[in-house]
Amino acid sequence: MKSHTVTLKKISYLNHNVVQLNVTKPDHYAFTPGQATEVSILKSGWEDKKRPFTFTSLPSDEHLEFTIKVYDSHDGVTEQIGKLEKGDQLLIDEPWGAIRYKGSGMFIAGGAGITPFLPILKQLKSENKVFGHTLLFANKKEKDIFFQKRLSEVLGNDFINILSEEDKDDHKHGHINADLIKEYSNTLKQFFYVCGPPKMIEHVIDELKSIGVDKELIVTEDFED
Image (cartoon, rainbow, N blue to C red; front, side):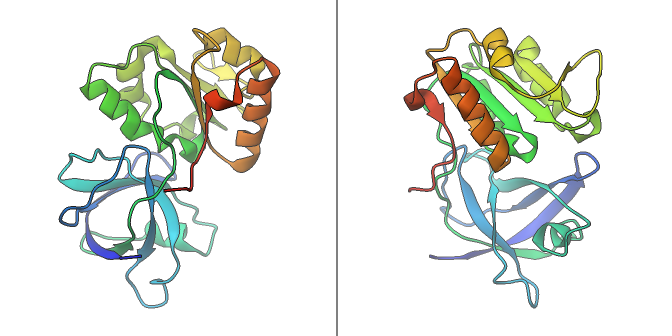
């Protein structure tokens, strides 16, 4: 698979542990909103340590953007990404699978699992097709939420935050379950896009099936091109 060298134009923190990388875009590089690519750092000892990250920019943008949760306690790629500076270089592969948009419905995200949904929602917003979509965003604490203002502006009351380790008046408390899904679903005959930690995905799929959602309407990561 062909690799491309890109240069970091800007790095910024969105909250205490989420960074946004703005990098140059290779000529004729194309992807679909929701897709991802393998990324590595072009520094000695890190070139072959690839990790999958989702594009959070639109295909029409002049740059590429990645939104990544970093872990300072991990001795790995995400820790190194938090130390990058403008001018550093990365290696990216061709785009692949990930989440594919199939039609209107509910997006269910856990933490950094929201990243495939960000460009999809941007695209829908640009086409005036946001109406009829709902986003359930699960995090541990309020400080973990990112893009809250932007998503509220796009989705209004159809953007619902759920916190598992804090009880806040303006957010739901607990975990995403069948009752919460039914509360905010316009219909169970719509698409349900699910992305997050593996255990969370498994739990949400079980909850969706328990309330009669057809498995053909449940959309998760697709690793097939």
